[in-house]
Image (cartoon, rainbow, N blue to C red; front, side, top):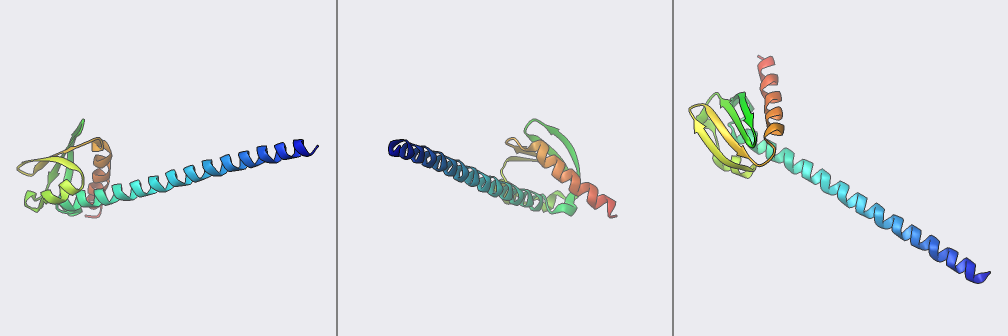
Length: 124
């Protein structure tokens, strides 16, 4: 009887240890996801600042693949260094239209910028 009891305790201990390992892995991944979201929010802030601020974005012209075209009120307010920090690979300026080459977040960023532009226009 003692051998069966010892085996039972070993099995219960193994299950508890495995459960704790799974819990730790889950919590670590959850905290990494939060930090990625925060860093994306900071990148978005740098992008908006690099475009000359939210009041300088007139409209989103188009989104094609990894390219995002934005119409600005004043292209002189563009800050290329901040755009690079925000993850923009390349910046092409044509008058007040700016084309940003972005890895894989073009559609996501266009939605964020459209929200800003529409909220700014509705406040006028």
